[in-house]
Length: 455
Picture 1 (cartoon, rainbow, N blue to C red):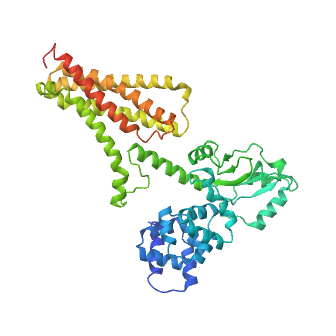
Picture 2 (picture 1 turned 90 degrees about the vertical axis):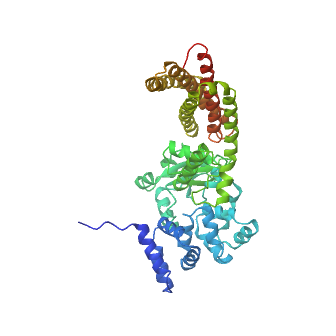
Picture 3 (picture 1 turned 30 degrees about the horizontal axis):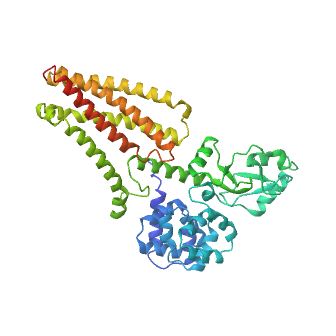
C-alpha cells in the first residue's frame, strides 16, 4: 500500500520549526521558506507563539513576507509589521499588491502612513486607493492592470506583456481605453492569442464591458462578478475613466465576510470578527447588547403569560404546553427570515411581488400549522386522553405559524426598505412576536374552552 501524501501544512510547519531552531545560512533558509505556499505559510504562522512569529518575519525575504501578509487578516498583519524598521517596511509595501498595501497603510496611524508613503517607490500606485472606504469597489480594487489603446495590434500587445511581465494576479483580461483613459472594451487572453498579429484591439475587443463604479458596495460587486462569472471586473469613476480592477481572490474574501456577517447577525452577534477564542472583553461586548434586547422581549412575553396567572393556576398542564406553541412558531418564522434575507442578499426578490410572496408564505404557515398541530393534538389526546387540550394546541399552533409567516416575511423586508441590515434585528423581533402571540393565543383559547368543557 502506498504511503499517504504528507499534509502540506504539516510539512511547512516541520520545515519552519526546524529552520527557526538555530542559526542557518540566511539565503538558503529564505529560499527554502519561499518554496512554501503563502496560504500554508500563513496557517503555520498563526500557530506559532509571538517570539517565533517575530523570528520568522526576521528570516523571510521581503517578497515572501509580502505574500504572507496578503494571506493574514488585518489584525495579524498589523502585529507582524509593528517591529519592522520604517525603511524595510516601506520596501515591503512596495512588494505588496497596491490594494493590499493600501489596506495596511489605512490601518496604520496617519503619521506613520505618511512617512511610509514618502519612502515608497510605488507610492503613486497606492495613494489613490487610500481615499475609498474599505467596503466599496474603490477600497477593493488594485491599480495593477493592463490598459491598451484601440489602435494597438495583437502582436504589439503580446510583446508589451512580455516586456512588463505582469504579476500572476493580473491580467485575466486586457482593458481597452481611449486617450482620456475612458473604458471602451475588454479583450480576453484567448481572443488575444488567436487573433491575427496585425488585428487592432478595437476589432478584437468586446465593447460591452461589465464594470462597477468606485462607490458601489462590495456586496454588489460580488453579486455582479458571480452573476456574470467574471474572474475580474473593472472599476470606473464618474467620468467612466478606468481607475482599477477587482480580482476574484478579493471577491472570495468579500463573500466570506458577507456570509459571516449574515450568520452572526442572524444569531444576534454584532461583532463579525469574533472567534471562539477571542478575548473575553470582546466576546461580551459583541454579544451582550443583543441579549439585553432579547431580555426585554422575553419580559414582555412573561407579562402576557402573567395576565393568565389564575387560569394557569387552575389548569397547571397549560404551562407545560405553552412553550410548544411559542417554540414551533419561532422555528417556522426563522425559516421565513433565512429565505427572505438570502433572497435580499442575492438580489433575487422581486419587490413588485411582495404581497404575492407574503400570501404564499401565509399559506405555507397555515398548512404547516395544521399538519404539525394535528400531529401534536393526536399525541396529546393519546397520552392524556384530553381531546379539548389537543384541539386548543391545533388551533394555537396554526394561528401562531401564520403570525410567524407574516412577521418572518415582512420584518426583514421592512428593515431593508429603511436601509437597515435585515439580518440584524429580525430574529429578535420574530421571537418577541411568536412568543407573545403564541402564549396569548394559546391561553386565550384555553380560557374560552374552559367555560364550556372540562380538561
